[in-house]
Image (cartoon, rainbow, N blue to C red):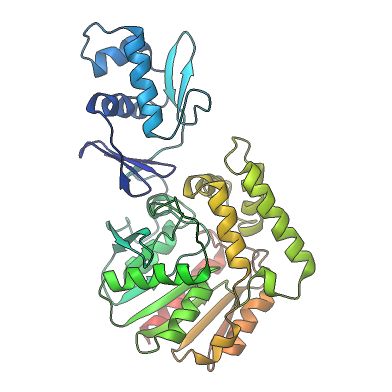
Length: 394
């Protein structure tokens, strides 16, 4: 079983702990302690139970148990003061408190066509050496999804926020997606989030997957990288789909009020992202999924904190704000479908119109919804999926 939380993956079968895609050195007994706490995360684990499970009942001192717990915390970049993952319940024992996804377990209802196909997670290096995680799933013509603001290969795969997207596309295509730098299973220890570096991440996973010609799919912030790639490599992109996107980031638009709000949001992210109080994360949930079911909204709020750190989230959002690929739109030669929600609160409707108007021959489709990210329950999702699949099949 694989347990996924924050930027960590604990593989109980392989006896391995990974952080942002990189192996973490951990003593076998400390790993046993961590696995036991994770498996019993629904309750407090008494010290005597830990001794029995980890030390097989041998006599050990309280100091030895405390030392092992401290070692587990250090492996998770935690400590006794923060107790983000392992919490001491004084006089009772210990409890693992981070939300955990069991990889491969069904944590959301499956879509009508059945279970998700198995995904294969792999790694490559971007041009500057940053470790990038990518995943392949499904069969059929290749479809590459460019990275958007926040995502996590494992958590997204299990969540009701994105599960139906992957269900749809892996039923007919070989889907390639990846975690951009600073997010998900890719390396978090990154300082350069510039647009060119993000382009290099996309180029790296495409080269590693040995794709020669493919359809390219961008959502939200991922549309600008998809447009740039299609303009630079017209011989490789067979079709281009842009959903809820823009050519100009929030710093480059004639929207002073919107710019002030985005800058304020970045400041809030830096100070409030990782707190137990979800107020900052719920702000983005209300912006991107205002009419989604409560379960989807809860997952999206949780996914934000699990996807990346507050500092990275703010830096990435800031970098996207300065993007301006409007001059590249006439250079896109691939047949293009632009889809945008009429009442989108995350990206103004006019930005979708600008994309479609700037790409010669692009088709423009309007979704009658307020959701920027479409839940499976939104009637607009059914139309969106049909539009994309019909377009890709031509």
